Length: 615
Image (cartoon, rainbow, N blue to C red; front, side):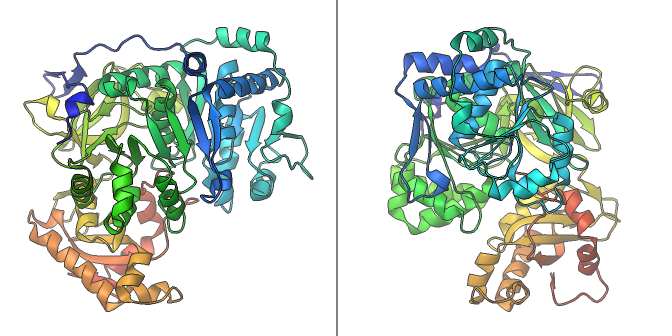
């Protein structure tokens, strides 16, 4: 077995039970003093390990091209030049830097430069620029931020987005590839780096405080337009100090990672990137992602890098397991130096957990440590952390140093709330939303529910128990726990189901709308790439596998609230514009049910179509 005692700190959690039934959990380990700002870490490593590799990427994400590499000393030098230009442009909280591109070295350095001179950066989901048809979310964000400068890697892919916001933005546009032809107020990135004023940058850097705003990250939540979550230097530095206390191996084994998770989201941009920076590690920027076609880039990069931590969402781990089963050499390489697999963003089905444990045991002699955590954009994102080896998937751990967790009885569940130095002070220019987000004791109300793994021992951790607002009642009055049923449903309907949305509010029975894994279904049906999706998803082999999954779910027992009697397989993926999916791949239950109401009606029709699979 992996000796997790050499990796993680032993949890030491106190639990207070109040007269109203609420419980407050906190670590008995005090949060250590933390850095003033993220830039202090960059300065430290540039001085102590100037030639250590900090960032690497392949041009255009192409796995056939050589890595472009930046050391810590070179990163600091480039940050100084970029910060000089930003000072001249008078960027500040009211005129921040907006970044529209994917993860990349220039993206990282520009963001660090803005924070170095005192202006926030705001990485915006590329989907809002590149996939959206109406650009309404992008317009909303730009209107809220009034950016002083916008960075795009190249003009052509972002032309439509730039045209959509032309009436809202009057600042400069920084172009990464140097081709600024036909674009007003554009400047080549090389000109941004042309001059450095060390004294001016040093004065601005010295003026930073823990309360300086360093980022805006946007989240839509369940509904509504994107909200700008204020991220301060205190939040991000305190969060990483707590992580280092929970994972002490980070300070002796600097993290070396290959990561695709988007920096427009707190998982990739705060948890992972800042962990590398705080501990003097190395980040290989993955040009792939867990999607058809794009995952091949990840596989190529995995073969040419060696990580000691692997971060991913469950969908990415599902795809990885398939490849590791087929390729023993890849499995040996992946697990050679790997200490920890960390998953977040959604619950990990138990079958994927079991497969990773067995494969790692077979190729390395011990099962790899698999852990998770819980939090949100508003908690930067750390709030709980599973810094111990749980015996099954789904344990989100315990409060980290500096965090108070309040569990409030709510509709038969325990609603979880958070107070910590690494909780946001609020939403940018939305005092109404800020006030509504905190209770009368100052706890942030995220709207999630949890279960104690052991009611008597808080050190055993917590399990995510869904969104309080997503659960519903059947006509019988029985509550349906959407979060836990979704995980069990995906497990039972694997490999047909990529994700599931639960229907059945005020109905007699539960139904599943299933986002199908179309590529796998094609293989199962033995149909070619040109076969219509409808033919694939209604093929007998696919329908019977899904029906077997429904039977298995019912056979597990638990009553009508624990299984579905019907399912409908969908070919159309979740829509970005409609808010059906977040950047990290989390499906928005409410948005899907609202947008696809016709499919819900079809699911429950008195005489259902052939697309509906009945138990």
